Length: 385
Image (cartoon, rainbow, N blue to C red; front, side):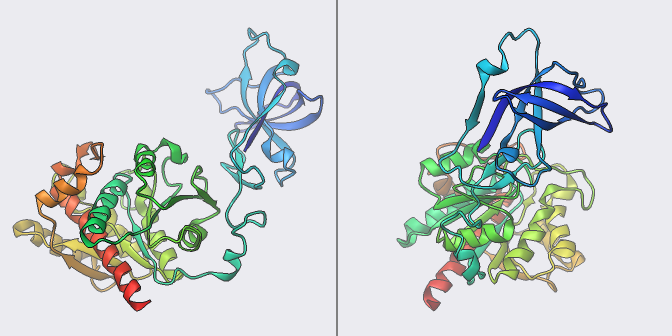
C-alpha cells in the first residue's frame, strides 16, 4: 500500500548534504514533519508555501521512521488545484494489512504484507519450518535465464508425463518491481509458474518476504514448490572489475540455500559468442562467485563441450580451483533441434546480452545442464519420499 497526500510547506530548514527537513500541512488539516531529498544540482530546495506531493504511508501506520513523511515532488504553482481538492488517496493492493516497508525512507516507500509477519496467515510456518528439505534451488545471474530454464523443465514434464511446480524468486539486485518483467508476465499467463516471491526491496510477487532466507522457505512451504529458481530481475550491473557486479549475489544465494538444507545449483553463465574475453567460456562472474564468494558447496552443472572450448573450460576450472570447492556435474548438451522444440513453446524470443539465445549455443548448453540437474534432483527426492 502507498498513502499519498497533497501538502503545503509551512516551514523549511536550510538543505544540508542533500536533505531538507520541513513541516507540512496536509490535506486533512494535520501537520507533520517531512523529508525532502534535494541533491545539489538536481532539485531545487523547498520554501514555505510550496505545494508538494507527500508519501505518508509509514507515518500513517505509526512505524519507526521518526514520524517523518517523505516529499516526492513539488507541484508547480501553475497547477491551480488545492490540497483540499486533491485530498488524500491510497494505492492499495489486495491485502493492505501489512506493516513491512519496502524502498524504505524514500518518497516511493510502500507497505506490504510480508509472509513472515504476524498478520500473515503463513506466519506460523516460519516458526516451525526452517529447512528446505533438499529443495533444488536453481541460482542464476541473468534474468533471461528464467524463461529458458522453464522451457527446458516444461519439455521434461511433457517427455516424462510429470508435473513439476516451479516457483520464481526475484531478488532486489536489479529491477525492483516484478511487474516490469515481460518474461514473468508471460510465464504467469502460460501457467508455467506455481507462484512468485519478491524479497528485500523487490516487490510485486505473489508473496513478499523480508530476505532471501525467508523467500526460499516461502517457495518451499507456502508455494509448495518442487524446484525454486532464484534470479534478479532485468537490469544487471557490471563494471569490468573482479567484484563489482550485481550477479555476485549468486554466491550469497548459494550460501543461503545450503544453510537451509536445500540443494544450491548454479546456472552457469557461459558463452563463446560474447566478444568480451572475460565472459568467454565460463564467465569471470561465475568463476569469481565459485572461487571467492560461495562458502558452501554448490552443484555446478556443466555441458560436455568439444575441442578447444572444452580445453578452455577445463583450464578455467583448474585455475580457479573450483573442483576442490564444489560438486561439478557434467551433462551431454541438448541437440539444437531439442532446444528448438523447447523454445518453440515460448511465444516470444528470448534475448540475453543483446543476442537471441539460439545464437549462443554455449549459453543454452549451460542453462540446459542446470535445468536437467534440478529435474534429476527433484526426481531423486520423489523416489526417496
